[in-house]
Length: 360
Image (tube, rainbow, N blue to C red; front, top):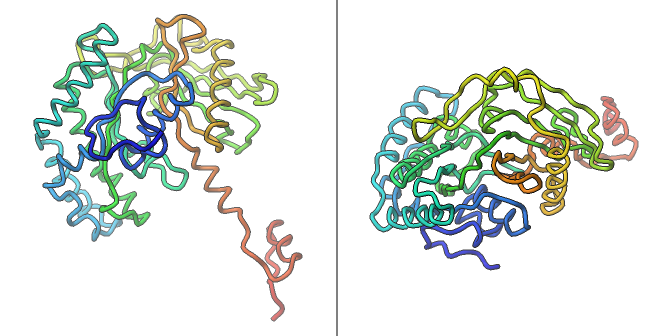
C-alpha cells in the first residue's frame, strides 16, 4: 500500500501504515500498521499533519522556541504558555471542521451510537520511534462524546505540542521545530473492564525471553499515570508459563464520567480490590498477540491494551497502541563497543577494567 496523500485532512486507520508517519504521526501509523497485520484494534481515523499545518501555521508556532535555553525554565514556561493558549483558541478552518465531524459521524453510524465515546490522542511525527520517544509528552483525552467536544480536543492536542515538557525535550535533543507537525488520532473507546501495558522484554532486567504485563481494573490511564499499583505478571515467551504473579491491592480506578465526557477517578469496589484483574486465559491471549506484534515489527515493543467488558470471551482483547521499547534499546546501543587497538583491550573493557588501550 502506498503512502496516503499529505493533502488529506482526515484518513481512516484502514488506509495507513508505517510509511505514513509524516502524515499521521507515530501513533496513527502504528495503529494502521497493527490493523493491517490483523491485530484487533478499535476503529478510528487520524486528523493529519496537513490539517495541523492549515490550522496553525499562520500562528507561526515555532518562532522564538528554537533559540531558547532548555535550562531557563522561566523563559521556556512563558513562551509555551502563550503559544499553547493561541493554538488551543484558534478556530478550525470550516472545511477541516466539516471533515472531522463527518469522520466522527461515520464512526457513530457504524456503532449505532450518535454520541460514541472516543479517545482523542496526540500523534507527533517524531514520537514512538526507537531513537526518540515522545510517549507521555503530549495530551490524550478519553471518553470524549459529541462532535463539538472532539473538535475542541483536537485543538488541545495540537496545543500540547508546545507544552513545557515537550518543548524542553526537543531543545535538549536538538530536534528542530521546523521538522515538527502534529497529527491527532480519534479512536473508538473500549468499554474496558481491565486495561494495562505490556513489554515484550523485561523492563527491569532487559530479558527478551519474557513478556511483562501490568494490569488493573478500569481504564488504562490509571496504570499509565501511576494512580494505581497494578497486578503484574511475567510470562515466558518459550513455554507460556506465568513465572511470576503479583496481585496488588487496587484501591482506585479510572471510569467514564457518568455525567458526560471525560474520566473520573473513584474507589474500586471492595470485592475487586485484591483479586486478579485479568484471568490466566486473558494473559495467554495477551502473550499471543504480543508475540505477533514483536515479530511483525522485529524489535521489542511497549504495548497498551484493554479487555472489553461487553465483547465475548476470546474476542475481548484489544490493542490500543504499540511502540518500540526505548529504555533497554538505548542501553543496548550504548553497549556497542568502539574499536580498540588490540583484541585484549576490548576484553578488558567489557570486564570493566581500566587498562589503557596503548602503551605510554
